Amino acid sequence: MSLLEVQTVSKAFGGIQALSNCSIAVEQGTITGLIGPNGSGKTTLFNVITGYEKVDTGTVRLNGQSITNATPDTVFSLGIGRTFQLTRIFPRLTVLENMHIAARRERIKELFSRWSSTHEQRQALELLDLVNLSSHKDAPAGILSYGQKKLLEFALILVAQPQVILLDEPAGGVNPTMINEIARHIRTLNQQRGITFLVVEHNMEFVMRLCDTVNVLHRGTKIAEGPSDEVRTNPAVLDAYLGA
Amino acid sequence: MNPAKVSRLLGPLALVALVVFVGIFPVAIAPNDTVNTIAVFTLIGAIAVVGWNIFSGYTGYISLGHAVFYGFGAYTFGLASLDWHIRGGWEPFLLLPLAGLVAGAFALPLGWIALRTQRYTFIVISIAWVFIFQLLAYNLRGFTGGSSGVFMPLTPWVAPYTDLPFYYVAFVVLLVAVFVSWWIRHSKFGLGLLAIRDDEDRALGLGVKTTAFKLTVYVISAFFVGMAGAIFAYYVGSVYPEQGFNPAVDLTIVLMAFLGGVGTVVGPLVGALLVTPFQQWLDLQFGGQGVNLVIYGALFLGVILLLPRGIVPSLQERWRNWRAARQSQLADRTRATNQEQPAVLAERGGEG
Image (tube, rainbow over all chains, first blue to last red; front, top):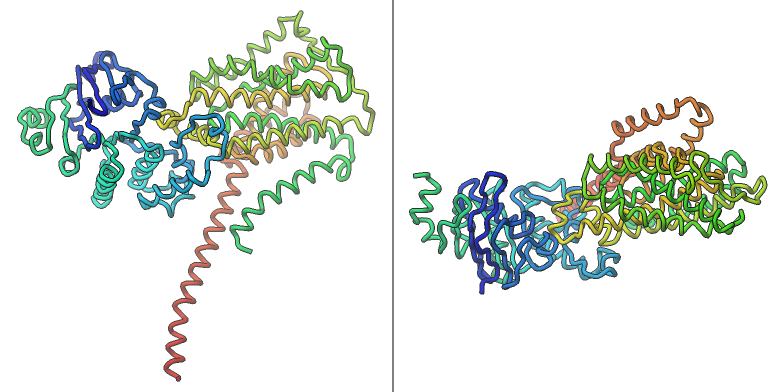
């Protein structure tokens, strides 16, 4: 049984079929890539998995349990975190406050307790240290550079200790040094904490270097799957990208 | 003393000083009927704006319909004291929590409907509530007394002590409201509300149960605004539709919040302290001619243009910049001293 399974999911927006019988599986402890030309349905698939869009048909399962059409907060509480193509942090809150948003709030007592409890504070600072943002902890998140915002968004998801993290273009609009740093963090978290990643990315070098398995989408359907070297030379993939 | 320690102590000290000042104000500082009347209205306005800010300030959903809860509180207070034959004096004040609870209970279905919308649509729906309930109050004559309204129990207090009970009751309710506002702001619940203000969809995706959060805080907010309405009605002696469900109340509340600083704990208090006395003065100068409403509008535009973040956030920013500049100066000085020392030591070593 795979950790995350998307089975024959279809999703249409009016006349546009964004996903058509799309199926992918993400194995526990892997870094899985999801690539495809613009408009191939990658972000829609992320939205369907994380509950931001409802599927027309098909199922989404986490650890064998159906999470089809669950709300985003439920999906998150079950252990799936995600980042967005255009970074979405909370600009008017401080960097440290951002880190506490994702902290679990299961009981009423927890909800009305101070957000800066010692344990949570320590955990948040450790994660900020990990992404080199602890010196900015009291600054409003809105003043960070784009790359720093990406790292903050990444770090704040880790607060909830998710099983799977969906990264939507983590290297998009980021300088090469920062790209290497992001790749290093993904690898470290995958190896040391066993976090599973599903990564959408247009930067092929980044995907090929990082991912164990790569899925290729084209017009809402999976056209290829396999190790990066294999996918790179797949004729259907070349066809989709080059339009040959 | 260390600047960090100073800034940590500054808040609690200012709070204690303010509480003592407000506590002794009507008896020791300004034992004057006119001033005390303005002070009572200021405290009532402060309760309303602190209550409003708990919802609108923290979630970013600007409500222009909280006058509905002001009206519910006022009518609940009046009708309950009338039906239960409660005589004037301290006893009716025991109805204040009931007035707040009824306002909160009405907020539940109203919020459930209105909070399905966002931004401008929410503002429009919130305004609509005021007019709907004003019309209902006019037309449900058997229940609300129609246009003549409901009369409150007559108070037994005589001058110069007429205002003092209202002043101190309003002061206690205000302290509770400010404490609740502060508590929410520093809780995970409050952080969730601020996240909703910045990006609601993102907050939902990080586990914040946005609908439940908004609805809960809408009810809490209505509770305090309802109590403000009840104190106001008891103080002025009656409530009628145009006064209970009055859109100008919303305009005033929003003006106070924006002037002082929306979404902060202290800002709305500062706003109430500035706007209500000014409003009272305008009413005395131009009351009945409508000029006061024109001036409110102009003032509101001025605040939005010149102080979009309000007084308190602007001052906080200056304080932060001053501290940052001071820390940077200190760091420069330390660096300069560290660089000078080896040079001096080297010189001395040379001399030796």
